[in-house]
Amino acid sequence: MNEEDIQQKRRENEEAATKNRARILGLPYLDTRSFEETIPLVPNLLDKEKMHTDYIIPLQKGGNDEHYQFMVTSNTPRSVIEKMARDYANYGEKCDFFLISLSGYRVFMLRYDPPREIHYDDIKIASEGDSETLAQVSKTLNEVGTDKVFDFLLDQADRLGASDIHIENLRDAIRIRMRVDGMLHPVANIERDRYRIFMGELSSRAGISTAATTPQSGHMQKDVFVDGVSHLLNIRVETIPTMYGQDAVLRLFNFDESLLNLDLLGLTQAELSAIREVVSHPRGLVLMVGPTGSGKSTTLYSIINALNSTERKIITLEDPIEYGITGISQIPIDTTNGGSFADGLRSVLRLDPDVVMVGEIRDGDTAKTAIQASITGHLVLSSFHANTTAAAFSRMIDLIGTNPIFSSSIRMVIAQRLVRRLSDSKEEYEPDEATRKYVLRVLDGLTKEQIETELRHEWDPNNFKLYKAHPNGEADPFGYKGRVCIMEQLSVTEDIQKFIRGDVEDVNTDLIEKTAKGLGMITLEQKGVLAALRGDTTLEEIGRVI
Image 1 (cartoon, rainbow, N blue to C red):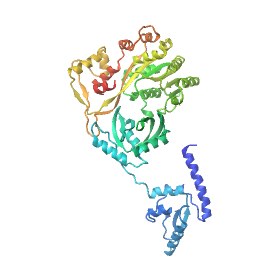
Image 2 (image 1 turned 45 degrees about the vertical axis):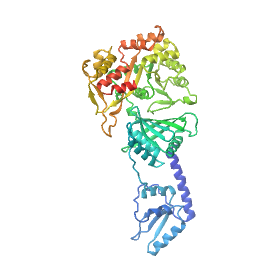
Image 3 (image 1 turned 90 degrees about the vertical axis):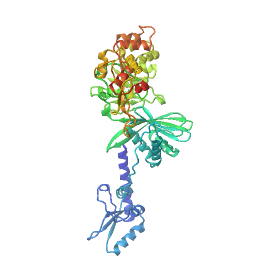
Image 4 (image 1 turned 135 degrees about the vertical axis):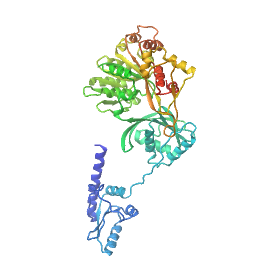
């Protein structure tokens, strides 16, 4: 039984009890459910204070041979009913009283006396050294009602496009920071009473214990309304005890299934074609690598969404499930309490899936099981922690050793980063000699055709421009808006397979990368510099992230 059914059943029980109570009190019973939201209100007959204190609601204004009608509850004092009947009789009027349920009374009172809607100032992100904004936001958060402050913070984080909220215990304050476009920004310092409210909400909504002395993980969801339209916010919660209390990080996943689309990732046509060609095959292993927060999950989900059709059975194993996708069987794996991706994968393979996504390969057992699945008629997608595609092979070899089966199963490794995208207010500039030499050194080895395909215009190594951020007022305080995906793709060919099979001695990351570059691979750093030359981002961002 869902929540709506439960509420409906409770109301039915309450109405039945009210009907029995009406017989005892000698009052006619009135079931208001069919009209309580729609019947016109009777203004200016009773003042709101009396309606609150005496639990009485006007139903019909009398006069012209019509009786006055009032709705009362079992909480209405009998003396109030009798006095009103006498007072109206003294004026030559008649009034009738009907007994209604307390739930019906509350619905009417919300219409007669709706709660006042208080509008608080939107949260602004403080730039470095901006203590005035920090103080103003802190003041706002400390003023928001206790029953609204947690939801207010979540709504504001979603409005700002934040990916994380960090709640941190300092010695004399609670600091709140938000990660926007990959950068952490201070938002407010709040009172400890507010902190207790936040942690109490996390406890009830995400299943987090406020008294725990060990790290915890939880999950919650919230409907967020923007301009009258709602969307679902998935929130992953991590807490850890520190010297001054439990710190919490809330990772926000703004779920919109329509946005999980390869065409919306900002990839080049060549990158899209390479991915689509690999995943069009019925079997094989595709690995996504990169640090936390590099967009691996979004890319994997977008691939899954592209493959999602009535002809394919797709199963995912996740810890936790970050996005719910229609038409896909998604299985949570609780690795914190002994769950295993390897055991889960062995179980789901009995269900004969066409495509399996494994949240993360963390150990040799999971790696070997995924490899085995990928050569027995399944397309397996997974994430793996490594900095580059070449480093992924080195790490995997360290995990499972040189492995001929792995060499025939792996089809592609994708390394990914997210860098901040320059806004329209960006400024063009002439690079100095040191910067010019750096750009040419990084691009050395790429053909003119490769560079021009990426830049989408002609390339002159002796005359090129770069771009820098130009903050432009309150609407654009940092000169960046959103993020752009930087992707390195290594398609596995016979030359790469030699390293995995053990045909080449002294396998190392540099040697694998050199071979891949010789086969036409563009590295993360090269992709980043090309994005800076296009004006998508800055060299400073590439240096920070890559």
